[in-house]
Image (cartoon, rainbow, N blue to C red; front, side, top):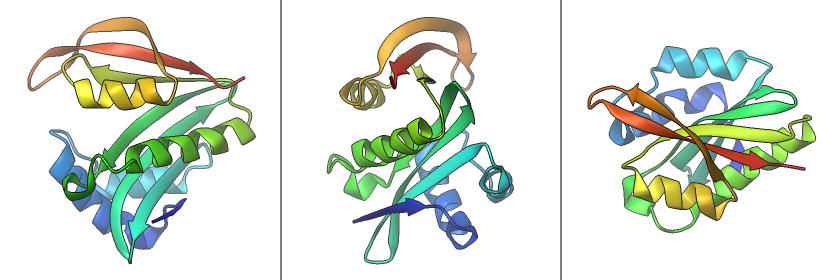
Amino acid sequence: MTIREMTVEDISGIALLAAENSGTPWSENALLTYLLRDDTILMVSEDDGRLTGFCGILLMPPESEILDIAVDAGVRHLGIGTVLMSAVLREARKRGTAVTYLEVRESNVPAIGLYEKTGFEPYGRRARYYTDPVEDAIVMRLSLC
């Protein structure tokens, strides 16, 4: 497995992966927009030329926010999400980030487990943050210092 920064050539594949993993997936245009920004890191996992996951983070030093993480359903529970998350957090730390936040559906127990495994802790709650279905978000925080 290879972890690397996303390229323009990855956009279609990542958009398909996002569509399979999210009720509100990223469009190709949104991925391109974030890829071209200087304040965003998008990383992908690849195995034998096949994209298996991606993770994005928005930098606002000294803070940052995880934008999204997704792993192909066929290769979940192999540690790919942990490796992707660790890679973007390492890069964010290099670029001056001291603390990272994210929001997660309160019912998304597997994602919460991944985030806790990488050191995130519950920090707050956003009532009715998600739609379709309406659900609260748990805000999680990780100190990178």
